[in-house]
Image 1 (tube, one colour):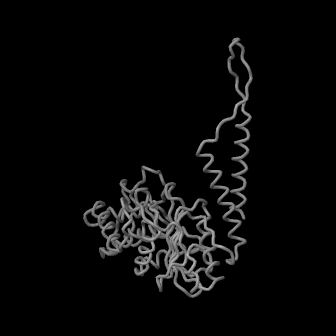
Image 2 (cartoon, rainbow, N blue to C red):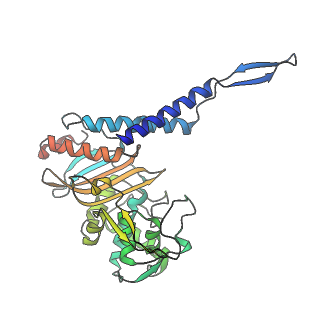
Image 3 (cartoon, rainbow, N blue to C red):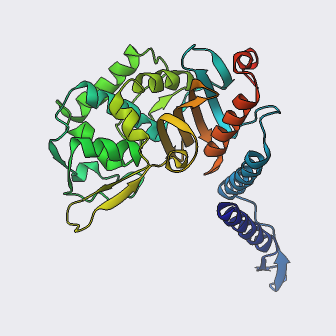
Length: 329
């Protein structure tokens, strides 16, 4: 409710600002060399329009999530979505599954698999370097340059808390360096049959990291077979002592469903950059069946969580074995 009130307040503020701009006055010089008072309307720029649209969609998504009981058609805020029965391979729900899109920090699942495939010592001490700082998008991090962590701790922070500097450090300390790591990521994608996927960095900050919902189901299924990834991505929080600090710092999972819900989740990863929208991939048990859920390019901050809850209600309300006959909802 607090999030809803904040979104509503922000929306009202945007509307009020827009109304003010519509009645703004100015003085112009007419032909008789006198100044006349004129009213003008300032056109809505694309940015404001997008913000208002996102707020509206987010608010509508939150309301719909609260009232939806699974009996009606499944409507999702995510632009691309795919739900697969992991055990049978049956498609339960599909929406724009073959459209390529940036995948943001969902990338880190591939980062983790490639790093684990190399069988590097997890207790080796690595350092956060200036090369790991995001100077392009300016994302923040509590991992200051010079921080020392084990490779295992970096893996946990990269997956659980989506720490970009941690993911960057993992790639940078790969045998052969960053270029070899990116090459290994793309080779792994090819081996998994991810034909529409391309990686350019280990963090997901590069919007050229693209994939499709169909490809990401393959990646999530592969990542699920790594016990380390399952354990780390389903940990709610972890305290880690950082360089220069007396007390440990608490890092939390970016997926609120892992932090506090009755979901049975086996793997989870979120992602967000402006180009990708809000993303969420999960392996979870619903109605006694293992499901892989891929949600991409969701507009609102909370809408991907709302989509996941709607999917669960829809599956629980209907007969699982019959859902595949109507995959578009």
